[in-house]
Length: 433
Ligand code: 5AD
Ligand code: SF4
Image (cartoon, rainbow, N blue to C red; front, side, top):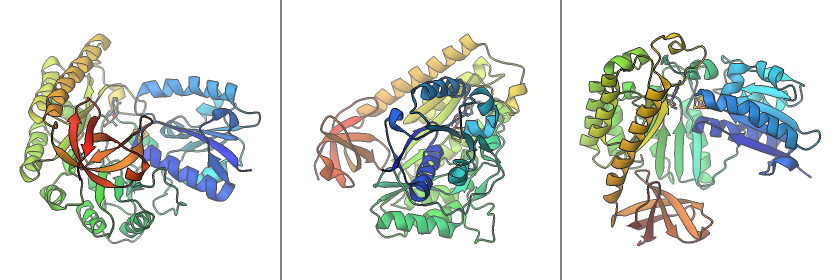
């Protein structure tokens, strides 16, 4: 009988891919199969995120629950960004944890498994050319890492401290991985990196210097690959060449994540984002002028230290002008080892909460208005998920989540769908072609 692995993944898409990498290694080398049942697991892994404070506090209470409910003799491992950041402190605070494995060390999973209280959290460890075994949660869509780490120094962000310096994965490895995924049936490839459009700046070996735009061009030549997505690009690196390729390449899905963070040029400077409010708006204008159907999503942080009412108003102003299709908004959370942790002009928590609500309400209003425009329209949907209520769901090219009545024979298929019903997060329609 195979050993059972229970894995919980928090945080971003990179973490999800890291989990797939760990599952792949554990399956191939140790004979593990995944389970959703904690109590029957021989190995329990939490793949953590440390981007904000709350999830870190939650980790220790969750570890306690896992420890109480685990099967006799089962091991618990803590991986990911909080593992990188807290290291052996995790074992000090939760002595029943068997190993701690950083976000930049996932290839060592089968090794730490056999070393009691192993802590491997070196953020300079280079996994950019590691040949992971193949495992994908979805047969329809392949997530592929194109770089590790992050070279930016945004003053609020802990990621450079958990994932280290940025190294690009050689283009030939990415192309080979995409080719293999397509041969196995995936029609969509989703490229992942902290800063994807900075791709190609540094490789660890002597590799051809391919930039992100060129990488997209080459990937789009793969026969059978129908859709290309990526996250996250950085507004600072959105040059004309990239935007024009994005617009004209029919395989690149027309949805762009442009993390604004703040609409105030002063706050952006304090955040060390490298662009101004005007630059951001100009890039949006350029993008929309060459690609009118693009849907743009963003991240916004409210109440960064020193954010005045006027600064906050600038964020709302950008929201009103751009009318983002989706916004992920966060209250600023001070993180250890970041520059902003030492900023003194901290915003009162009541003000921060009020600002967050204001952003969320404005977002909802814009979303509701945007959504009305979809009624009666026809979108090409790639179906990926079977829902419990006899519905199948997927995404349109511009990233709308759309469901129709149907069964698993629609999975992995493209269909034209006419929108008949509007919901805030999901649209309902019927297949028309
Ligand atoms: N506080 C609040 N939000 C943060 N993010 C990153 N660091 C912080 C922080 N310290 C947000 C950013 C980023 C998203 C993944 O998380 O908006 O784009
Ligand atoms: Fe992803 Fe950032 Fe969270 Fe790490 S800290 S898992 S990079 S969101």
